[in-house]
Image: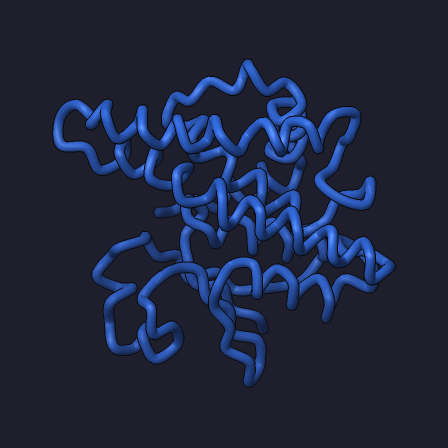
Length: 204
């Protein structure tokens, strides 16, 4: 059986959403980011970075969120959560990498500034990350005009990854009202039934 390491409130959530959407059985080993368990010799033998998530599928041991998502869709999706032409595949990679390379770091830093604050969060850090987001979110906003999904007019793994990333600054209080297309897309993906099912498994 497929094993997924990481709790619901980590990047493992997007992996579990994909597994649930594809109807695959899996075992979840809940772990918190930056926890003692992730730094153990046992876990580092699976993922030497000590980060989450990791996936074990038979003899395959895989880490890095998007690599896991791409693998699951390509191996088990039979077209679901993936695309059907090379051009659409290139577009999927383009928007996945855009979100990963341009949006994920400031989104995460904003979330961490709230989550790990000792007392009041550092507003200067939050404001700086908000400025970075304001540089790149208009590009995504323009792309999502009139679209329900990120690529190919269908739900793909790119939506699960992208929505997870964009949910972080929202949790941290970042106002997306200036980006109605992003806000609508984010709400659409985060309210999918599989999201509720995965969140119901929360134990860490």
